[in-house]
Length: 151
Image (tube, rainbow, N blue to C red):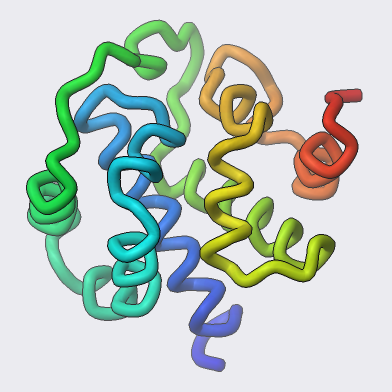
């Protein structure tokens, strides 16, 4: 372990942050970006995150947008946000914690847990920056996923 957390948790944080960055850049929902990228590209990002993290995020995102042929969409949760917009790093951290919780609770590998998180109703709630859900306690976000409801 280097730093404050295990390396693979940091790699997951970068992977989720890059997904958010690509979603904003292409105006697609995170779930759509994950599906366009597919398991192979997601696994590659996760496996090589320590290298990609050292590169320019615009170049890295452009490479994956091109490789996965991600089209321009119309989803723009940033422009409709009434308050401060969380950074792609902020949202990456939310997803990292959710995915780690799903993997632990459901005994899933990280990539499968990532797909589960992004394809759930919780992802739509996280993307609504006008709500307070994305900065709720990590355990509450995980519980919403696990129990299928927001309390």
